[in-house]
Image 1 (tube, helix red, strand yellow):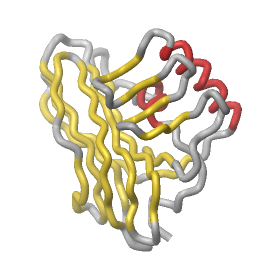
Image 2 (cartoon, one colour):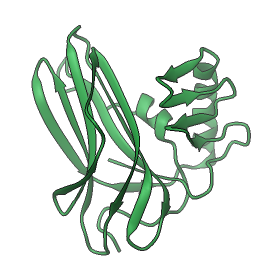
Image 3 (cartoon, helix red, strand yellow):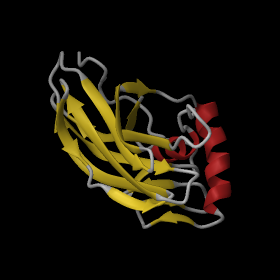
Length: 186
């Protein structure tokens, strides 16, 4: 079994979690930031999917975000670095390989006026109960009615259906998660 990574099973809740699950800030102007990986397919070794992340800072300054995967502390797949003023988001498809017994981490590299920092966390497979999907859909339906679209990378439709880099990760019409989708996050 992969350390920190389990096989495809159930759920993906990528964009909703990206928007709603920011880490608690250490001080008042600490940036919110997070990266997550949603596997769309895998075999015994190769994981294909979407990696997405964001950084948001209360100060009106330049920010940058890059998400990457490390296997046994070695970077194996990465997004490009995306920049913005006060906020930036990135979402890309990628593949990586990890064998049984290897340690897999999702890393967030972010830059603000405080400097550049990298945080890496062991991956955790998360299954989300129907009640949570239902609750998240209520939120994404509200956001979708406002026309949520980040450069076509993260799109929430008026019915709450959510797409990351063209991949549907939340089906609010049927209150389900598309088959073969799973979320890995901290």
